[in-house]
Image (cartoon, rainbow, N blue to C red; front, side, top):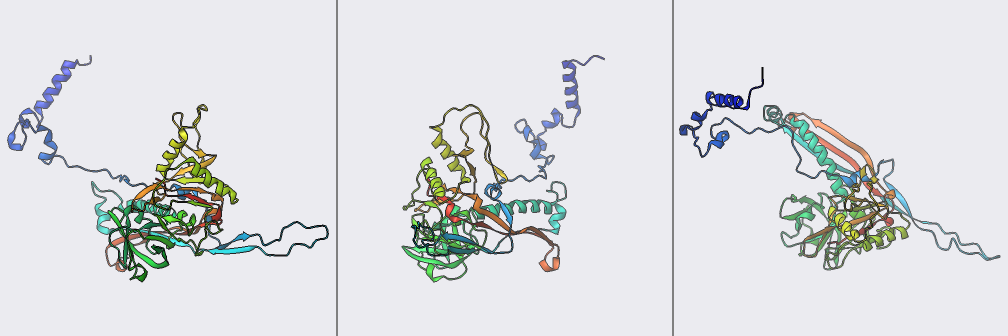
Amino acid sequence: MANPSLAEYLAQSQRGLYQSVFGPDYLMKTGLGFTPANVHNVDTGTGIFTATYGRKVWQALNNQTRFFNAVPRVVWGNTAGWRVRTDRGNNRSRPVTETGALPDIDISDIQTISSLPRIVATDFGASVKSVFTSQLEGGVGDVLALENENAQLDHVKEINEELLAGTGAPIIAGTNDANNFTVAAELAKHFKIGDKIGRNNDGSFDLGSAIISGVTPPDTSTGVITLTADVGAFSNTLAEDGVYITSRAGFTSIDDIVADDSMFIGGNVSKPSVYDLGARTRAAWNAAASVATTSNGVGIPLTASLIDTAIQKVRENGGEPKLILLGHDQYFKLQQELVASQRYMGQEEYQVGVGSERTFPGTRTGMVLATYMGIPILPDADVPKMATAAGGVGGSNVYVLDTDYMEIAVAQPTQYIENRDFFAANALVVRGLLYTMGELRCKNIFVQAKIGDLA
């Protein structure tokens, strides 16, 4: 039989339309709420359509953990500290004449550093009713599996954010008294419950008598930091005073490591500490090779010269940079800085691995940076940004790091615990917990560098 013609197809379609219950006559019935003007609203006017949603839950959050992936991970071992040789000894090596005396014997100056493992925990739960109803039509499916998967993402993200937490911020106008102080909302995430903080009040330093007990959520307009108790040193806190971390409850951050006690934060001199070192003298073994910040809390543009200086300082102190860590904003600014000197060298694609992470690949068009002077460039959205003197937020920092001396020591790999004891919870809920015990160790702080206060 020959294929029906187009005219026959149209005729069959028309007959089907008129024979169906939704024919033209039905659609014209105003008693059912349909008129020629709102025929297109058949899905909302009669209950014949209800929106349903797929079981897949998409993420509207940045769950990248690039720096965490780039740092080597090692087993904790059976010690809590390490030693650093900081002095060769006086005159133990010198010229000796033909009959001259030998050099005096002097021992090396060896310093000790220690840091106990830190614990990061993420919990979740679901009621037994939600476990059942989530399996019904229109539900998300296995709600416990969903919450478990999300908790795993959140757990690793929290570790990455702690590794990249900023060291301090200026206080801004708001809730400021003996128990609270206010910082820019975007900077509040760098302060964690259990952290100890110090303050610079117009040149008078408090070195860490206050412990944080609460931090407002990051989606609020300002960040209010609450202290555990009335702390006299904070009773006269003023806007534009500076606060800084003196001890972390969680993982030590790279910003804590690459710092010194002459570093400016938002135009205020700060005295951040790391591990158990206490005071940190600029250009000494217990501070970074180079910390470049402005004294007025006003951001400056990133230039290749600033990065060159940081690389030079690391090398002068005996290190060899293995990683340039920066935010996505500085990644593109550096690209724009270098594009003027770009020379056409043919077409190639180039990508560099850093730990289990990889840099962005170069493409055949435009200028995409994978390295600078052979050093891999790694952008991470969690890299801390500068705090301006006015209480605002500027561009992200740039770190030039010798990762040969850096490791994440894992005391206990991530553990998962599930509890279905309704009597212990005093509720019909199923609870889950993820926790990791470890610490970011830097065996040589002297060969790390930072460029801060960038616009």
